[in-house]
Every structure is written in structure tokens, then in C-alpha cells.
Length: 119
Image: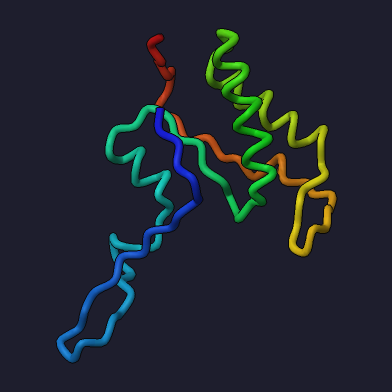
């Protein structure tokens, strides 16, 4: 299992003869790091559909790891992590403010099928 600290997008660019960068629009279109990791052979990657708050990631990952250590299946642990985001909507925002967000739907799971995590 691989966990990254931030959601990252990878954009392929071509350097033209005059030194200007031009975006390729053939097979090198913009793609998420999660899909690149899947192409490289990862069994499962959890990414975020959009930017999320640090407090949301912290809450979800705490729940996911708690359930994994309690011998839950990875897909069930992720589901329960998303459920916790749904149940606790308050997130820390800028300037020490808190806001309610519906960000439980942002975690996206890419999988090739049954994921085996050995203990």
C-alpha cells in the first residue's frame, strides 16, 4: 500500500524547438498520479477527486488505519473512513475558522480487483 501526502496531477509537456513549452494532446494528456500508479502495477490507490482540507485527510486516515489494525478489509476500512467524513462535517479552514463540508465523496478508489495486504 502506498499513501502520498498530497493529491498530485502530472501534466506531460513537450519542449518545442524555440524553447516554448506546449501541452501534448495525444497520449500524454493530463492524468492523475493515482492512475499513473495503477498503470505502473499498484493494486489499489486512494486519491482525492479535488483538493481537501488537512483536517479531512487526517480524520479519514486515522479511521482507515484504525480499522486496518483491527483486521478490517481495506475496502471496508476506506468505506468507514468516508463514513466518518460524512458524520463529522466540521473542517478547519483559513484564519482559525471552521466550516461544514460535504467532502466525504472526494476519496476515490482505483483498484485492479481483489487487493491483498499481507500482515
